[in-house]
Length: 153
View 1 (cartoon, rainbow, N blue to C red):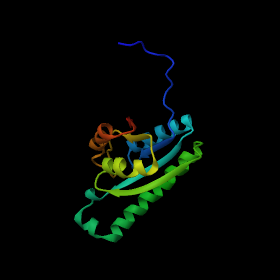
View 2 (cartoon, rainbow, N blue to C red):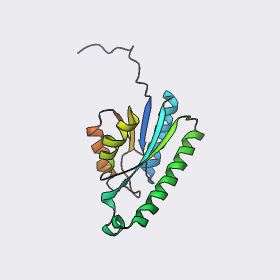
View 3 (cartoon, one colour):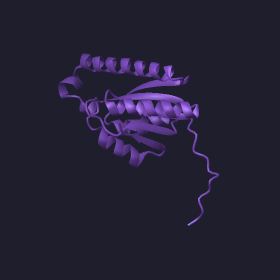
View 4 (cartoon, helix red, strand yellow):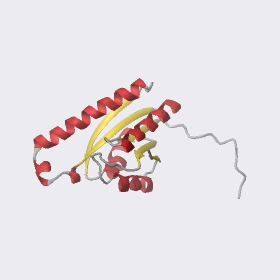
């Protein structure tokens, strides 16, 4: 085994992507992503995903119901963006995405779109929109081609 070099510098991230929802785990993910973005002077993208597979058939067929959910999620994104800016992050973007599953949408659609080099998600969600986030966080950890931070409360 080779000697551990103390000359190794930690990776400095440039584009951090954080997946959020209305759960405690989502808030912890956001706080940790903001901390890392401030530390690295990185750009921050905050994303929420409307998981179409989690909607009931009636909701999925009701455009008004989908628009109401989307409106609520977009208001939360604006609130999260203000929080990040209040913490000193100058380059903050938000993304509202729709997809079948949180992890797949994050990895296959959003991360490449924003050129993310760090992905931050909560370990699981108790009362947010993503009931299956725990398994989705595991999906992210196994399948991400970039660094991933799974945050626990």
